[in-house]
Image (cartoon, rainbow, N blue to C red; front, side, top):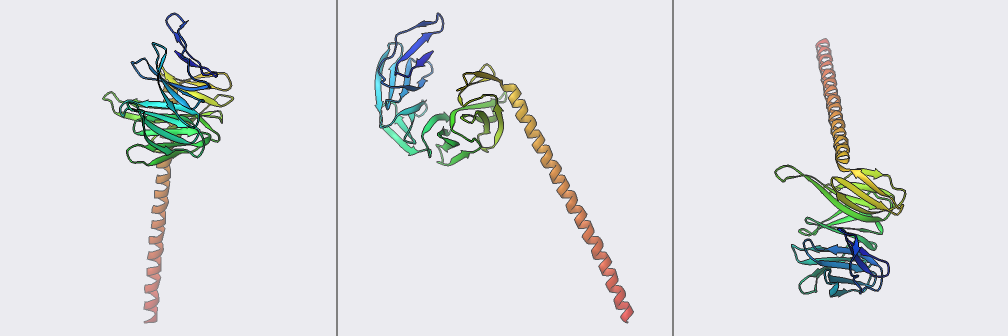
Length: 282
């Protein structure tokens, strides 16, 4: 377990015996984010000292330093593309080639400073000092907006459910905000499916484990949410919406039929009167 501190120090604890191992020393300001590579000793740290450092954690050695002009709040690794994505206070997302250390691409991704960045599937999700979450499609360049929060969005996470044959049933984006709420969004439609309320202050982090959702907050509490219960609530809400839609369609259809019948009756009466008048004139 790696721990980053406000003075730039990084330590890690062996969870087997709870002992502290050697510290990782190099940063000169607050550690904002730590990102590890799966099945590897590589660790990437983002800091307010405007750098991202790559570490060989088992040796405690810094292997590479990526320098920027602004504090880096978060960095994410995309092994499939061999890229390190960074998000900065300058509102930009940069993609850096891991092998060469060169900037592959960059773009302004937000109207305000970025505090959270997430790579999931073909999307790059960005949020921060802005109530709007943005998702950039890496294949088409299209942008999706997730609107509903009333304050800064401090953390993001994704969740998907699958069938037995591996097909995706649902794909969610979860967001924690300074408005004290967690929102669950349908990634493709951008619709808000559910709002979780429980924290008394801004929600700063989200994580899934053992079929449960864990949320941390400035209120100093961690809340554990039952994911199957959330899924059931979302399913019931969707069923109610579908039923209401069917009911409205039926009511509209019946009103249309009644109106059509009424027009036919009026038409028949008018036609009969007309014939009578003509006969009277003759």
